[in-house]
Image 1 (spheres, helix red, strand yellow):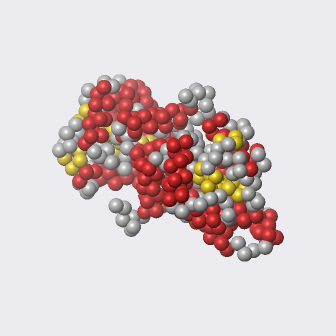
Image 2 (cartoon, chains in turn orange, blue):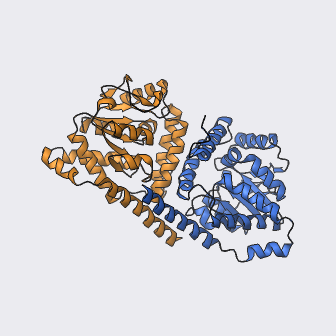
Image 3 (cartoon, chains in turn yellow, purple):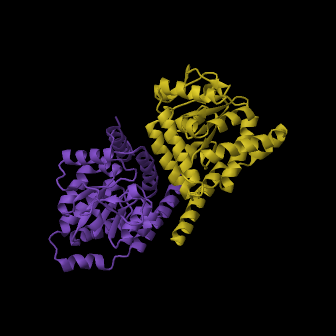
Length: 249
Length: 249
C-alpha cells in the first residue's frame, strides 16, 4: 500500500492502475513502457497542469462541443487509467467512444469494450469496417460510422503515424501527449501536454462550463488558438523546470 | 521484425530485450515502466553518449581497477539488457556480480543467477546474509562478502534510497542513471548519465585501456573528477537538445 502522504502518491497510484490494466488484459506490455516515458515527461513538467495545457484543454472542450461528429478514441492505457473520466466526457460532449489500439488484437478490443460497458459506457462504436488511408492494415482499422467519418477526434496517447493519417483525412485531432516534441504532439490540431489523468477531467470541467454558451461564443474561444505556441510554451516549461530542479540539487 | 534502417532501431531493440526479460521472469513489470522513463531521458540526451558521460565512464573504470573489493550489482533490467557486457566487465575489473533487486523475490534472484551462469558468469555472490543499515528488510538484503563489504559498487539503475544507504556506509558508488535529476544521480560518487547499453561496454573499453597503468596513473585520472560538474553538464545537454529539437519542429 502506498501511503497518501508519499510525495509522489499520484504518480505511483497511476502506475498501479496501469499494472492492474495489464493484469486484466486491457493494457499491453508496451503500454507499460509508454507509461514510463509519460512519467518522465510528467516529472519534467512538474506533475502539474500548466496554464498552456489548461488553455489547450479549454479549446479542446470547445472543439468537441462545436463538432458535428466527435469521437473519443480509447487505447489500452487510457482504458486502464481514466475509463470513468472518458465515459463522463463522452456523455458531456455527446462524443461516442471507439477502441483504437496500437498493438491491436480482437481479444483486447473486446475486453476493453466490456470493461467500458461494465463501468456504464452506453455509446461505443464497436465495428471495424473501414480503413484509415496510408496505414498498415491492422493499424488502419476503424469504424466507418465512428473515427472514419468523425470531424473531431480526441486521441489520448496516440501514435505519431496514426495522428498524422487522421490529420491528413482532414480531421481536427485533439491529442493528449506529455512529450511536446513527439510526432503526435507536433502534428495534432490541438496538443494537450498534460497527464491524461488530469487532462480528461479538465476537458470535462470546461465542457460543462461551456455547454451553455452560444455557437459564436464557442467559436470565439477557438479563433485565436495557436497550437505551435502551446507546444513551445510546454517546451519552455520543461526547460524552466530543469533549471529549477538543478538549482535545488 | 524491426528493420535495421529504422531511425530508432537501437531503442526499439532495447525495448524488445526488456519485454523478453519479463517473459523469462527476470525483469519485473515495474522494470518496464522504468525502461520507459529511461527511454524518455535517453531521447532527451540524444540517444548518444556525451563527452561528460564518457569522462564519468573512464573515471568509473579507474575506480573499479583501484578498488580492493569491487562489486557489480545486477538488477532485473540490467540482467535483461546487458548480461554479457556485465560479465565481461566483471572479469576485466575483477569485480564479482551480485543480484540486487528492488522488487525482490527469491525466485527472481535465482532465475537471474541461472541466466548469468548460463551466459558464462563464474563469479557471483549468491548469499543474502547481511543487511544494509537504514533500509526496510527485503530491500536491505545483501551478501556479507559482496556488496556489504565492498569498497566500490557499480549500481546500474539503482533506487535512490538504496544508493544513499550505500554511500552512507562509506562506499564509492558508481551509478548509471539516465535522469541526472534523480536522487540516485544526485547522491552517487560517480554518476554516469548514459544508457546502460552504451555505458557498460564503454566502462569495459576504458578498463581494458587503463589496465596496464600504474596505480599512481590511475589515481591521476580520478583526482580532479567533479561529479557535480558531470551532472550539471548532463542537465545542460538536455536543455540544449530541447532547444535543438524544438527548432527542428
